[in-house]
Length: 344
Image (cartoon, rainbow, N blue to C red):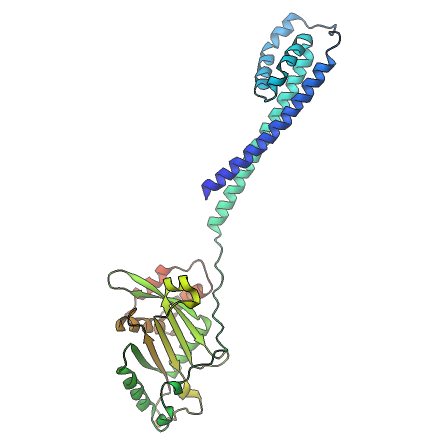
């Protein structure tokens, strides 16, 4: 980039210098033509002394060097020599005017080069010190999508007379025998905090350890179905490289679903005991070709840790906030460093 700016600066400077040379050359044409025309008549009667001519010979030599550098010198060389023989005074005046014009042109070019260099330097420094923030990441509009309900997974009518303890055991046993599936039961008060954080920060990157080859980042995006109240939600996960390539059409490696149906609907479970706490049912399905059971469990736990309100919340929320707002200070290495301090 710097090389391109330098070439652009030099090109503009050369153009300006050529324009000034052309102006100076036109001045020489007019001066030489007028002086030669005005001195074709009788020779001036007042001649200078020979001593004065000798004193100014060095000045004439310098002026002739200036003329020789002018592209129009060849065309008027003969007439100028005649002018010098006929009227030395007029000849010197022409040299002085020409040298003044050319010096003005050189000074103007130098000033233009300095100004251009300063502008380029300011632009580069501004780019380095004031990086532009990335556009704020926005969640996809999913409020019009019909939410997936627990009734699509199991017959919840059979659970009406069960306690939450019984429901939890049935839920976990139901998914334990299914391949490429994980399940969990989350206390409602914990899920409320988790859900509220996911509304504020619906996207994030999760670093997945890959044996000894380092980490692979997995892009996670929440899908909510109601704007002002807590309800079922899901999380869609895909490798970051797939998301960068295919955007919203990227194939998922895992989907995590959270069901609140038994907490707030008309089919809510009634508490049979004082310590029988309402819960949210979670299940995750993953692609066994892309993830192992341990890797899928690692991602589910990372979601819980990053979006839960517990120890280290300030540091985690800073990462969530900077990523979702497109802050240029967000660093992938900070996420990895935080994960390495956790026991997942």
